[in-house]
Image 1 (spheres, rainbow, N blue to C red):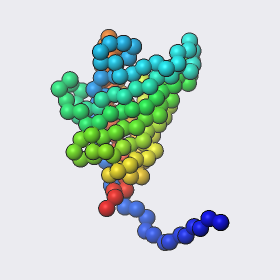
Image 2: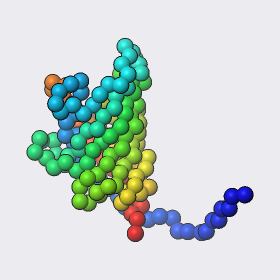
Image 3: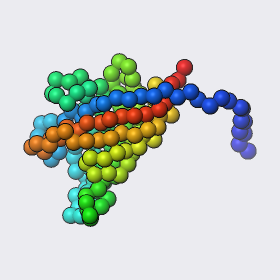
Length: 156
């Protein structure tokens, strides 16, 4: 028989995180910088992409890379507009949050809002939102702004 014990504890103290980051280059289809690939292609719904996009502290090519946005998206609707479901992990590589992650998911168009449903490392128990806005789309390459607003329980 399994054993389980419960002990009273105080609720965690949360810290707030607000930051604006940018997907440095979302490169689709082909080319030397490709970081997104179509796994399943359908004419209406079901098209599935897998990607690992660099995330930077600015929208320009010389901005500092702070992490990678890795995950999948599936086209889940095409009328009245095209909509995708995203399942993502933002893996930080910078000094402040190195190795920590934000787990993100949601259903939106290219411009939309996703939920932060968890986190690891310094961002344990994260919850909040990410607002994604396309800044540039040219030659199958997109740069998006990511406005992150989260609460997390720092590990002591």
